[in-house]
Amino acid sequence: MTDPNQTPPSLPPVPPQLPPEVPPPSAPQPEHRSVGELVFDVSERTSTLIREEIELAKAEVSEKVTKIARGSAVGVAAGTFAFLALILVMEGIAWVLNEEVFDGKTWPGFFIEAAVFLLIAAAAGFFAYKAVKAGAPPVPAQAIEEAKLTKEIFEKDEEGPS
Image (cartoon, rainbow, N blue to C red; front, side, top):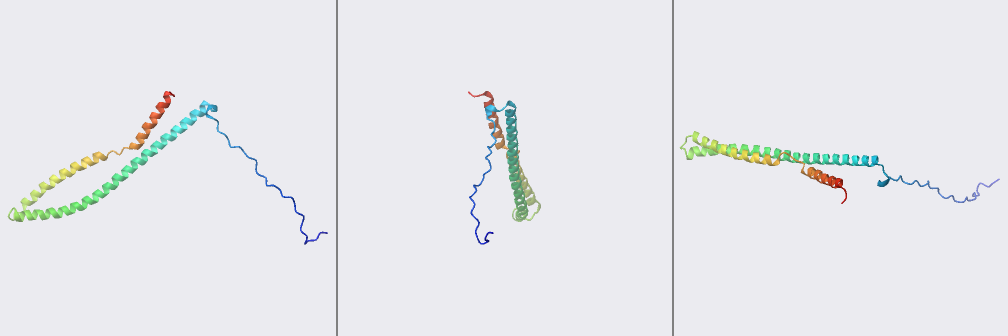
């Protein structure tokens, strides 16, 4: 019988076993690929390129539209306050003209102010026309430039190596 206080004899250490190495799957070299695989690869990359160009154009247009909308909103707010202030100023000018220039007659001062308003409106309308014409339509210039470069590269590749 064995003594329970006695230590068991030591066993020889077992080296850890590593799993067998699996070589990574090797992609066939371009010279060993079939024409079908090459055509599939080219069409897949072309469709990816086109999708990325479309996404770039969308992002560019949405950025420009956001800037135009933000500027328009601030312009409307500024125009509202300026219009309210202008009403008060023009009312005061009409009464000053009536008192000082037209000897208390009320109608000439208001007609003169109406003419000034029409001149200001014409100038503001012309300025607004120029500003809108300069900003519209929002064209995705960067995406168009990238598409042109891509087209040039494809045309050079079609001509073959020189």
